[in-house]
Length: 77
Image (tube, rainbow, N blue to C red; front, side):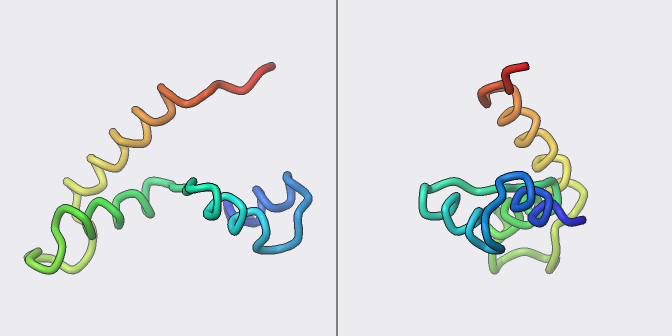
């Protein structure tokens, strides 16, 4: 099951509706791969000497996600 499918199943919304609502609210759902690609797109851009995220991009993505998780509201349990 993909991350998208799991989230939509957990929220019990029609397919695509969960992500549309998140996007419309200005939010994004990211994992290390999508964050690495975004970092590559923003910081390397068209002048990059490589086409895809490299190890540095992936390391930055991992650090960014860890920082986001640190500052995000924690689930109540």
